[in-house]
Image (cartoon, rainbow over all chains, first blue to last red):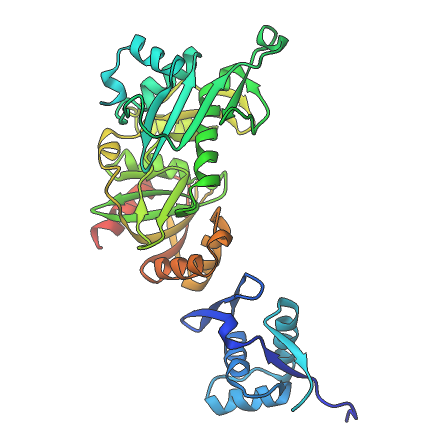
Length: 98
Length: 303
């Protein structure tokens, strides 16, 4: 058990994201960076959860919300990898827990 | 008036004096050159294209001319000039017409931001467009030449122009650029096609151009709805086969093939999303042109 607080993530403001979804895949444009990204089904669900949240979320919280939406949740490792990738792409950033 | 209405002497006069104002789809090119090979190329490939009046507005002012140094006499070269400046290195003189074609492509892809421009061939049947985006060597021009030889309308061989307001394809029917083995493949497949002499040892290998069909040039003002987006890949002897491609992946590939997606920002995103949403999307392998054209004829017949 880690004594460190879980890393939390928030997406860029939803008004900075434009996306289209087809068959579970999302193409998202980040208005802040001008970049466009293709997201697979899990990443698409994670982005929706983060964008809809009213506070930064930890990985386990993202998993819980994915489960609550009835979508197929990823493993903790998969969700953590998606969040990390979002950080690299500028779609989300680490934030202090609320 | 069209180019074919001009005698060879009249065409030479226009090219060497004030310039030939040649309409290609939505743009007018003012072309100047005293080189016989440029005249021959225009007379063959642009015979059906409209010639605008001498004083008409021109979008692009281009010239194909020899350099003014000693190379004029030893291993002669030609330059492409745009507004009097030379954006490219000179090429051997026997590549003059090819250089004009490549230069005109550059004019459009670098300046016509009233469109979203995709590096793609496009053809149409009954107003429905088939987009064939692809990197050099993918076989898109070969497939394009094969399809127009079987009654599809040529929209463009190289630059597909998407109208920003509607997403419709704006025709830019110009000569089809064929390279290396595709030259003989098209000759065998469509012996009636009018091809220029082959120019060897260009940066793209051996190159020949195919004259656009007269009907396609006549219909250059008729836009078409993007109905199919197909990424071709030629593989020797491969059977013709379509593989469904997700719309999201198609979007990303199309954006990768666009010259000015980033220029248009959010509008470009929304336009591509609309085009992709309204189209069926595939990857496509083929190794025999006859099989490939038959497959697309079948696809169109079911639309």
